[in-house]
Image 1 (tube, rainbow, N blue to C red):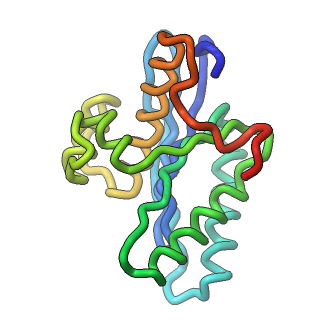
Image 2 (cartoon, rainbow, N blue to C red):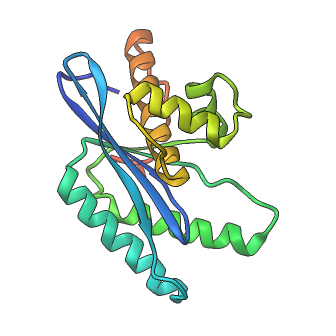
Length: 180
């Protein structure tokens, strides 16, 4: 992973089959700052193919609008409900397909994101949202999916800085030259 440039924009994603959270942060003047966040909500009662297309198209628009240099995505959490896990995996696949092949793509386990932000891999969602608001100086309530996406982006930012300090790659890339 190259050293942090003067400016770097990261898109964090928290994929979901009904709601996909996104968060954009930027490194400028020596610190990370908030650019944008929100949720991509699929139209209610749409078929799975329509949901996946919706996620792909909205993320493609976000990528064109915010032009991130890197993308960080939360790794799929394996649930006991097989049907839910399959739908989540499909939504994640639609999100990953929207990311151009040349754009570096990194993934993080949910526990790693919580550990990076809160100091505990077992942290609750409100704790993560609180740390996101504190670290980025945001006011008010954040939607859970948007807070999770910003948390993924911040986890990537921290991992990037640690890798630079250690002189080694501390995160696993799933893009740019490797097969997805």
